[in-house]
Length: 506
Image (cartoon, rainbow, N blue to C red; front, side, top):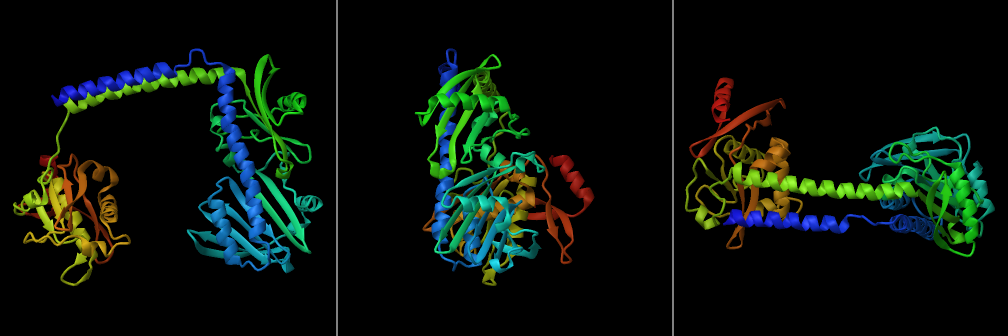
């Protein structure tokens, strides 16, 4: 009966998938509809990026309006700020009496702080996982205030300005940067903010870049220059810089002066190019942005979509047939002494080859303290069950079948509950036996009886031997092999005995 129900369920699942395939199979999809969906995603993300940048600058300006901020508070704020903005490579805040710089460096942050009396010297600190791990000084030929971008910011106070590297970059494509800066002066107290963005990091936010080879995203900055953000990125998105496209789309945009946003098409190299534009508030430092995708690539995306749907359906059919075969023809049911019994039912049995009780995982009732050696005993028992015929381990029950519960174990952990207890136990087992072995051969659940909680570990008869790595008193690593003998676990210490046992058992 159960087999028939499963077969009916699998058939219904495949029929539902087929209906979904037919509903999503795009036979009459038009390129303008595809582009409309793509431009909506790009527009939401681009508008969000520009709006978030403006809000970030306003927040930094307001938060650090005075000159009393200490190095530690600056560092903590900007680390949180950059954790929430993955495509920001570095940030600079310069006030009248100090300057602060922070940048990403692999899995750490490098932060520099110094007063402006030594404008050509910065004291750096590397921060990893919230801790300062190293410090050093760096000397510069020029201070930040002597650089070209600083002078441009001073000429346009209270205005966001963007800076792009129009020259061929000497650094790797994935590290190409562009900049956003802001200058504010109030009663002689100047504030300079400079944010540096990873171009590829930003483009990864636009998932559509992965689907098209010749996509362009062009922005016009406050100085009237056009910049193609999608150029130069070859490793991941295979896009190219195309000055002809950039100039042509700009000419066509001139015909839509009275619109803040819109979608249009024009011809280029005998192909239609679908285009969307949006104009920005002047306070953002950008006049507009444009996204273009050739029509033949939009049509190709439709064909690719249909092919993916067919492949997904075929894969579902194959998985369904394979599942039926495995369940009904190759199935090996794994059971243990505690598979479906309640705690009182289990405790009617005595310790045996298939059942063992442990008072605790790590709390030593005799010494009244944590004893890590107890964890090794639990691991040894679980390994012995797997190397033998499987079995059940109850943690929280003593040898006389008294239910002690896990409260003392819970109190030794960071979080005092069964969830964290299981995490801790699994981490021990993963380290000792490997994630694959534990996933395939061990099940953990908790049983409650009279307000006391007990951990039940079901260990299946394993298909491969497991050795436990231990350390002796001198710290030397050894591998040990345990099996069940009667109602206890024993080590086979002879290489001959181990080989003979594995040959017979496995």
